[in-house]
Image 1 (cartoon, rainbow, N blue to C red):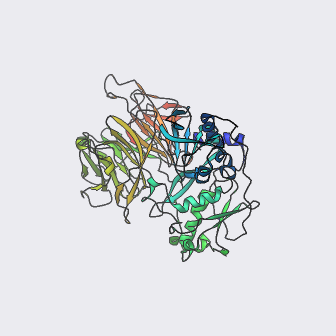
Image 2: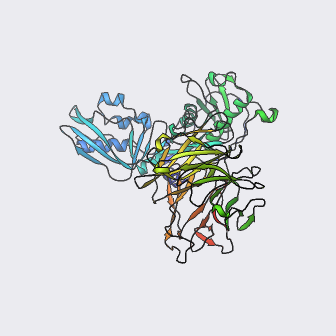
Image 3: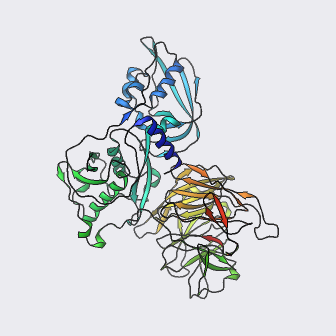
Length: 586
């Protein structure tokens, strides 16, 4: 649960008598149908005030914004602040803007105003959140109706103060899949905590992924545009949610597809503490979901719901590739002498059977592949100022060539013929920019990048487009994530969070190593941020990786204490470990 989620939960508990969310692990559920049952009561204790008689335009605007926190009866009170025509046409669920600092209402002619809102967060109509953190202007025309001021041109959205938003919205993670159905891909959405939310969750799944993820993931509920929206009825006693789907979604579906539908719905809906299992119906007809044990293993989903990496890191020891398991260093036998290459930035894949490593030369101009038993490393890619290799779970090593300060994403097959030519990955949005760090998520559908443009470093998470064989073809323009720190490096910490930092300037191996304290920031894909409480003197490198219960143990490399592991809010040094430049698989 993110920091914002915790705040939201606390505020909701104080202000709402409603069903809250509590993530659970989905299992399986029997199939049945039921009549539509009443959903849990969602009673909002926020009662907006209607317009006061004789209120001035600024009071009408303030009242309208406050009433946006009261969605009861289709925002009936908020509509009282509008002209009759505007009240009929206003569409508040097209989006939401969230602010924490005061807005300004600026006169802009006769009966016209400009509402200037310092937007911290924004929701689109699909409940996807972004964090523009910039001012947005909304023109408002005021008219008098029977002698009372009313708003004639409201924006088609709600504008909420942070506390209001936390009180009435809930975040739920819906899931999609990589095209080969190996991994579950999280997609966080925000919902009004009111009756109908379960059906809204199912509807968002049917509508498909967030725009930035489209093209990289697939859905079991991939229907036609004219498919009817899902319905959800809930049996309070059994906590079974029956999801009614359009017949076009289930007609002719294979056992694999039916099981995948149920898995996708359960992963999302069982986050509600009123739902323990899911059944599927279509109209009045029962949809028979096969028991998994009756389906051959190769015909049933085997989804990794929480993608993870192994705990063995790779690093450099005396110009050789070495492995590190916790505080234990392990030699890799069968590798040739690599000292002439001055290896740096080593990487290896999660697959323990794929005993292959990637690394850069000392000038960061060549990426190599090497396996035990080979006489010399094979050139995988060449360029200028290459980023540290990242090896995905589909057989590809990634790097970015920044020659002439023009980023070009390159991939090389690590299971292919030695010396095979690298392939470019289309990423037009990087034109004229450089990339200082790139890291693939374990699911292979998302890449985290730090992009430098005009001296400013920005963090993105971009969708990876692949062909049917898993070959990377494109890198989408992605989702920008705000950071509080200046950063140039990024690693995945969990499947929905990252660690980012900027190495401290200076040579850590010199007689006078840098002692400036570097800080590390955790950034959730939901937009939350947290600077870790303890910095590291001479910070150079951070090793983190996806895994259960918050990810793998975080290890840090500094110039004063070269090997440290996270111990609560502090860092515990270990002077006996000599491996450097370490990283988890990926």
